[in-house]
Length: 543
Image (cartoon, rainbow, N blue to C red; front, side, top):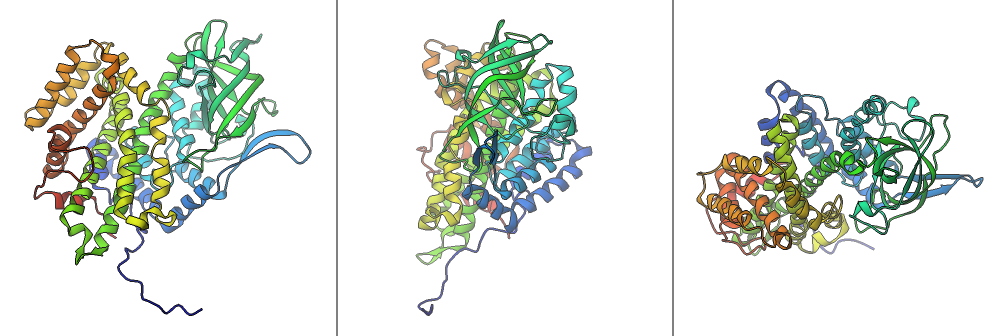
């Protein structure tokens, strides 16, 4: 049938073939601000290489392929032997390999390592988010393993390696390894102390056998897992290798893979332990204290991943509107659409600036920075991850019907957007963790010093800081309003950082809306100022 009915016009060109890092002005500026001067040239070079790869047609195609071809559980081989493996599409391995070789699991011990890794994580999320789950856990496992120096001496070089080596073989034969995590159980969920998995000591020091289950076990193809189980001395942390030293498979029974809303490329499994060999990490009864460093690091990755999803959605929305015409003008030039795009851009930049500031605190590692992380990570995790879904939905709407079809990539971003709010403790868990942090010495002082560095620069920020202090002065019934407190502290922190570092038009739009009350919470309701066009232009990708 001849195709000559019409000529296709008024469509935006594909957003492909660009540098995801350098085109993100907020991110590039944060790297310049937080990376040590002696490491800055190297950081920019490696991030530019990664950014060009993330925006390339080939890598974007890998992301689509990995999402459209989810992992497959293989419980037995052709002869009936139990193997408990997960088969992934080749695109998954290509993405994961690039992430590892780019240092996204290697931050500990190199100059400005956390900021460099955080920026790379945010960039590479925009290629495909699911495969970064094992990257995040592998990176985050390092502080937990350091509770056992002997274990860390073997595993830390493998976890921070830039070699991706797939396949289950003894650790002595590997040049790089991945680590997953299993904490939650059917009856407990976020209440990990309700776990019933038992750990029985063996004769050898530190060795146990585990019997029980994990309801969500992330990245089940990993080389080892950090899990919690009830030992004679209480809830304890254990490392479970998939392959034992003699080359035999450890008992690690994969029951099924979860059929998830998003994050389709990544495998999440239900697993059973039945006489499974494990090595204790840390002291008996100190399981939560041992694994909490891993949890904190993965929570920061939730913020980074959400910031990456936001940036990807905003970039697509602004790009589309800069090329699409309606009612006689480009969408980007029409006042109402400009308001929507500027509002989205402000939200995205606030998330990026906050995430990179927290990564910089990891690098600084002073007592004050550690106190800031203790209070600001749950605050940021609570707020940024919750803002992601409405932002992505609004960005999708900017493309209209074009955004609702799979080819646009926006539906995949939308399905992915709730994940980071659920993973590593949902909203209530973060809000309650904030209350625990407030009871620890130095944390509130660290927060107030951080926001106080911007005091006097914007009257709306000053008023919002006073409002937080008022809320903290009245702790009656604080648990029931912990979400309100967490959200308010998050936007105050974001506002303070933007006032210090963002262009005036970005900081003004944020403070007027999020702190000053001239906003109804729906994107596109910013107060009208001459600076909105500059905010949108700042968020635009130049091809």
